[in-house]
Length: 156
Image (cartoon, rainbow, N blue to C red; front, side, top):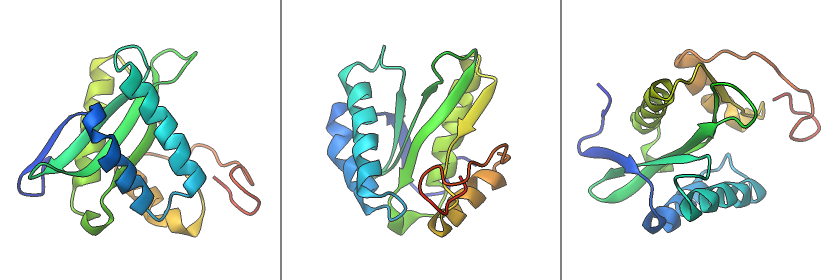
């Protein structure tokens, strides 16, 4: 069952969603302030031109309240490779199926568009342990690690 939470709905993101998405990002402890700035830049690209931006944004709501979002798109200069760029859910509702629902919908859309490979980049910081477990539980494999990529002492 996709929607494990009563009343969970999903739809394409709109400009009216920006403040709520930014609030969720700011409340997600795994994201640093500079990361939130980059997520906002990507969101602004999408909101400025949803058709030609190269990004897709889906939002999840319960009772008209934003509870999560996912941003994904085709990887530039590749054939049928896609990236999951950003995904976040309201911290109080983590582990309730919101992320799984959003990821499943993105995967279905990617397949429908002819996608053959989905990449998800994340960090080896201890705070990302649950995030890595989430993706691995959904069949994603670690195919590469880059020591010190994000900062000294990190692997992914």
